[in-house]
Amino acid sequence: MIPRSASSPLLALAAELAPRTGYNATLLPGIRILRSETILEDVPVLYRPGAVFVLQGTKQGFLNSEVYRYDADHYLAVSVPVPFRMASKASPEQPLLAIYFDFDLHLAAEIVTALEGQVGHDKRARAKSLVSSRMVSSITDVLQRLLHALHHPQELAILGPGLLRELHYRVLVGPQSDALMAALRGNSTTDRIVHSLTLIRERYNEGLSVPELAAAAGMSVPSYHTDFKSLTGTTPIQYIKALRLHEARLMVARRKGSMAMIAAEVGYASPAQFSRDFKRHFHRSPTEEAKWMRRHLGEPV
Figure 1 (cartoon, rainbow, N blue to C red):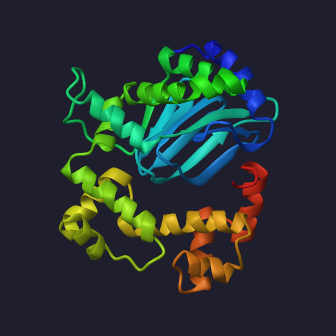
Figure 2: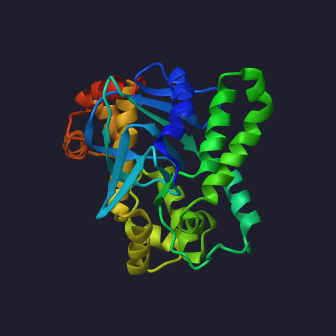
């Protein structure tokens, strides 16, 4: 376990890179730093595969009956994008500062393949979409070197790719890595569900049905439904709806058109049904949610 005081150098480096409330882009693709100064409750989120390192403040994720803690002593690793609910604690005096790290999935797969057969990795481990793990000194060390390099463009140009590779490695061999690697490595069943998630991502605005998805995965409908929920924590239909609504949320925040146009773009035949589902999911109307996002997350990129 890493004592909280050990994160002080990280805090100073991160705070300078995140002067604005919301997500602050960095010079490295796949690395963003969030600054939040508000207590948030029951916020729907859909993270990309990667990891979140909270340097100050606390976050909790809720997926079905599971609670995932990520704070100065824990980080959250995400193997597949799944919708869940989030709560966080912060204040203007002690803002939440968190590093969001997106996996390069080709690099992650390369590292997982290189680790195949290594002693200490349980190939029978059950794949999990979310894993909360205790911070370790090896991850704290690479984060500090990464943040330092982000302050020095010349250093970043030379060392950045290697630091990103090392961070991938540290997360993939960290605590509870077996469950994370099982999802990224895949077995026949996990691979089918992961490929199905890719199909959904590509065609979420079409009228996909569970039998169609099961057939594309080469599985029976009951088996597909069971294995899909085991990995993602939700049913295929609920997953598609959540993905549509999160995409619509970004479109609204980016002012991509009228509500009717956005509803149609994400696959809704009825703008009224879209508005009802949106408010039920986010607890705010699309217009209210766009204002909330700009206030708490900044202008969406």
